[in-house]
Image: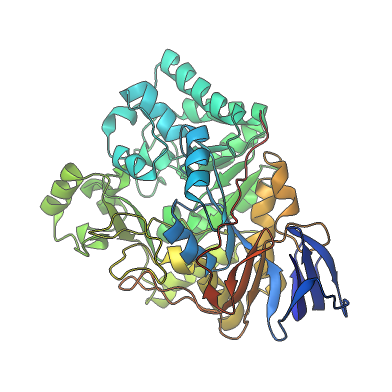
Length: 491
């Protein structure tokens, strides 16, 4: 089907174009861009006057793994949702199961460093399931340093996953923060040799844990410099907290010196993970200047009362999802810290979107609107629309061209070397993939809150994935499953 989007404000961050034009979509590609494109009987014409038209948002950091979660992200303008920080293993099973279930958005996965280590060090067989992975996070058996033989064994597993088409290596270093830094260096050397990026949740900063083997953000810069590997620093806002200015200054210096370090952030002062994570122990929270009351259990809404209760829930169900409040968005000084992480030069918007949980119905729903009672982090539904509201509509820190550069173009470029299929994404010129978002620049905003987290964003008028409409006139199309796998080139 051919579709003509008529008269919108077209943004192409690849060429720098920002002007009124028509966009013709045909066969899953952009066939023409320009003013006054001709009408034809074999095409559907949509008047998008007054709307902004640009390449769909590419989320490098999404753990939703469900139709329900991807639909929330579609309403947030996302056309490609990738799990690169954690990854899944085995990679072939991850892709096969996603394809079998159907996906509204494009999808893809990195090789899971955590799963490879857990298999070798703890005998835990990976099953390509995010919920099993969350449960493993609190298991100390895989968090120790490796022997020489163990290191070789799990590096071999990672190498095999890259050969099978993983989009790089996801490294949850913050969940095993006392491991030997030599292991991370060895992994980076492997990634460099394979021509694949790493996506790292860094270990603790020295301010938060003076006993850390190495400062987390300094480590990624040092290793990138030593190996030449392309290394992506995940959610710099949450791992840096109140120390964001020190971290960003150091990263900017390392990039100026030639290190291939990219950075992502999301526009929230609270994160989400499994309650058993190493950095949620009582002593680690104290080092961050936080306490048990900073932790909110996602499925039940319970705010942890004290250290005794925190220890209890960590022991009983280490994979239970929770929210950790690390910055107070109502505090102007702390809110400004969060904004600086988004304003940092070339900082990429990425959600760290979490699955949606229902107490009685598990973690998937094909109903739309979603059933009541769903629990997740509001970033699942609102990361991109909130970023646009804050950085374009309210403060003017970004132009619309800059917004699409950070939400679409730059994330695609992180993937160029490992996945040839990414080279036609994040752009809106002839031959580009027809992954397109059409939004209302006056109303685009997030609607999800911590107390009502599954409210879809507002302002996305149309969304096309591979040329197929997934959102039309602001409403989600429940029969649309055009998502395709984005895979790495065999290494």
